[in-house]
Image 1: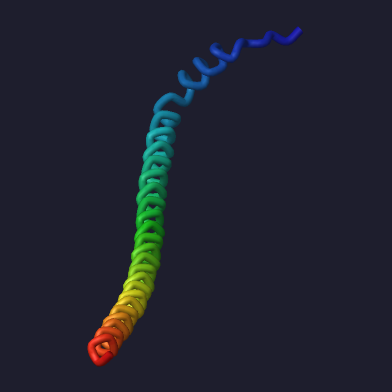
Image 2: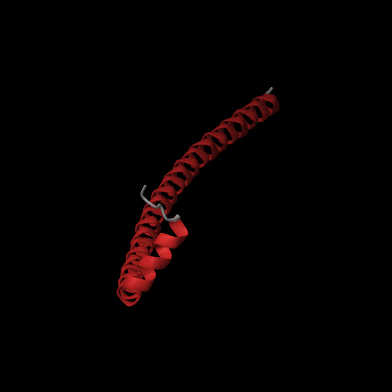
Length: 102
């Protein structure tokens, strides 16, 4: 019969046999993984900030166009009101002048 060791016993034996090598390999691998995670996070944040800047610029442009349209509409409406007021003033003036001549 073959004797089976538990997982903990096998890990302990591996560390005993290859402890320094495993520790150095884990340290180097962990450092590389940490650098990869940090650089990925940095590039992801830069990309996200760039995307947000583009979206903000597009939103500002949209708001500026909307404001320009609103100002144009307000100016047109004001022009129509002023035209109506002038027409009413002229009409009332003519009616007043006619009433005096009778």
